[in-house]
Image (tube, rainbow, N blue to C red):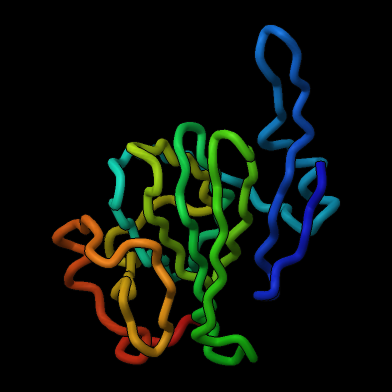
Length: 179
C-alpha cells in the first residue's frame, strides 16, 4: 500500500496493492493495522454505498459533533471527488482539492474530520462506497452549496443533477464553524 499526503493537511491518497491475474484482481481495501502506520487509526462504524447516474453531484457534505473521518472509493465507474477544508483555524480554510477516483485506478481517499466532501459522476453511472468513523446523525449533518463562489470548486459539469436537500445548502461563510 502506498499512502500520499495531499496539499490539504490530513487528507491522504491511498493506493492499495493490487494482485491481478487472468481471473481478475484482489486488493485489500482496509486493514486497520496497516492504515494505523499512516495515522489512520479510527474505529469505523458504518459503511455506505451509493449508485448515481452521470452528472449527479453529491455534496458538499460534512457532519459536526464530533464529525466523521471517511475512507472513500469508487467500485464501478468514475467520479471527480472533492474535499474542502472547513477548519476555521487552518491555513487552508476554504480551499479545495479534487481527485479522479475510479474502479479502474482503485484509489481511496482518507477524508478526516474538518473537511466537507462531495463528488460528481463522470461515467454513465458510478458506485461509491465509504467507511465512516461515526454514525450518521441527521441533526449534525451539514452541507455547503456545490457552487459556493468563495470556494470556487472547478466541477467538470455546469448543470449537475442535485438532490432537493443539496440545492438548499448554504455557502461556507454562512455555516457555523467546525471545531
